Image (cartoon, rainbow, N blue to C red; front, top):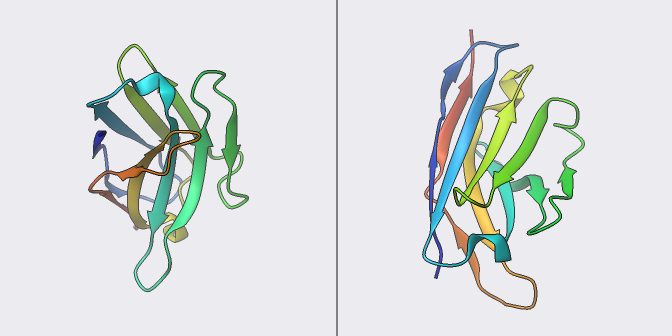
Length: 118
């Protein structure tokens, strides 16, 4: 079992920056591939960024490449999403996700709201 708690959401103006954090507990954090997803009103949940468990290899959705950076600190059991040059289209609830290769279980946090508006 993995428990995930997101923080750092809020209201930001277009062009601004925000950093989301996700704290994990309950299992060996370094075993898990960590991802950020988001879901805007009326839309399906979409994958934003992923970081591998040990090598730290990252992947991003085309819509956020060059603007968002995912990182992790295995010593702090945390994953982060640094968001820059934010646009109104980035407005969504952002969710932290954990999964382990070879295992079926997937874990989600409760989400944190990000609103980009002037």
